[in-house]
Length: 484
Image 1 (cartoon, one colour):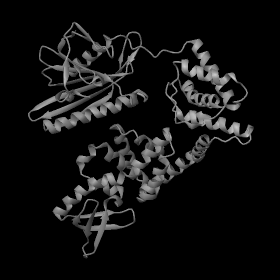
Image 2 (image 1 turned 60 degrees about the vertical axis):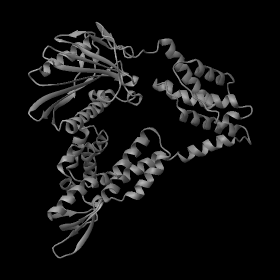
Image 3 (image 1 turned 60 degrees about the horizontal axis):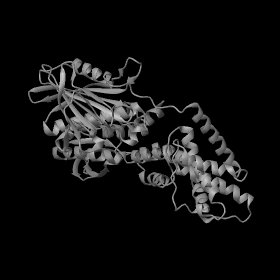
């Protein structure tokens, strides 16, 4: 959500008051801050986009401020990662709008952390980015700040100005003053001692129950009662879970599902339904019952047993997939390893799933770069310029480009011999020369070049991966770690 969203989202004006407080976030906007006073204020009709308040000084310089909700997915990630990603997206938005609307040139001057400390020792974590925008005869500074506010909201500030209107120091002072006018961010409430004791007791009960489900008749009742009454956990069940319908053992299996579901929630202190944990606990209890009760069979539980038996070796399968990646990428042998990854996706969850998804994207990297190579080949075709390149299958080709297609070209050497060259099979070091310079601002181009260079054991890989990481491609760190 940025300043330019104002052009196409319907806005509802707010009543102008001495101090405006956004009810959703609790953020306060004073009428005046130093030499700046409120110019206008608006609330977006779409609640998730929050509010906008504009301030101006006597030289008509405007500072725009926004408060809007942090998407739920981002709330589970680390603060520094989220802020870096958001800042990168905001800068890309400025770059796009300035180029398309004003035909401007944009240069990044600096970017990094900008934290504001309060008197009581609390901090507002933030990022700051300074850009210079050249619009015909006009040179403007654009400064953007992004902060977390009460963990669930972003506070964003953006100012675009010329040096005769105000200075960067003025904007820094404005931001610090506005944040220091807020109430101290409230830290997350820690469970009191009594609550901790109850949770520790429940964890011990869960472990005992899962090891010997038939020993205590009270344990299932206590577990189910706790899940219903406690604010610390969340359990969602479906009528389609067939093992619930077993005659005489319904309560036992429901308690098993509850135990496996809430165990991780109590250990991590994260209230979030965990159905996989519940299913695994049902399988565990079912296996115990089968040993103790001859002839005991539940078809729906058997299907769960089969499911998790298939996934038993998923860790080693993921490891095998990751180990094969570099060679497969270097040789551009895509199909077999890609199919292996696609099959793994059906079985993995969590961090293992993220690793497989990243691997599949990396496999497709040479095809992503091919689209950029094709543009340069068209230029060579037009110029009838001689080029030299090498391919991953060991060919060294020198000649003139005579035909160009979307995914390949035809090169004719000095003796009239013709070679069909698929772009994705060109070695990475030659792709570096063939991709037009304008695409080196694309973080994905930098990232995929870095990956290909690494897999081809070229030392230049580090430079491209580091640049990609600086521009927000966090997956680059995984490959950088492999270099150490």
